Image (cartoon, rainbow, N blue to C red):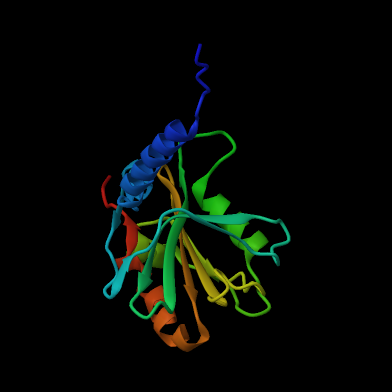
Length: 200
């Protein structure tokens, strides 16, 4: 009587192939989660000129952050010479929770995360926040991490915007020293990238 032994190799190969197909399908839709966030908060987004999609979700923990917080980007774009990455994350929808209010939340984040030694944080005047992002408030600051993002981008600029009854979002600009002037110009033009929709 011939004894058949179980050979897991064909099953493992099949499972690996299915996983590969699933990952390939997912990676072709870098902006899937991003689009959900845009719909949830009623945001409008415009791809900056000269940028293209980068891979999906990325996380970065700045070791200089006293509160040990992680920045999670659900979507990011990169310029042609790879000197600037613009990431989008920390989307929070205002669902009327008792302990959450978008405007006060971004002010708390700015106060706890900003490195005021290297850059004086900007708290936008309400009229400027409304004009740039259709928001009730917006802040701009740097974390100035001693550990570079992806071991290359040693400069950052965070822009947070909030609207009562809608929520908040974060745009993070990571850039090299050589791209500083161009990156800061993009920060000034950030309203053309992401904003709350009017009358929504």
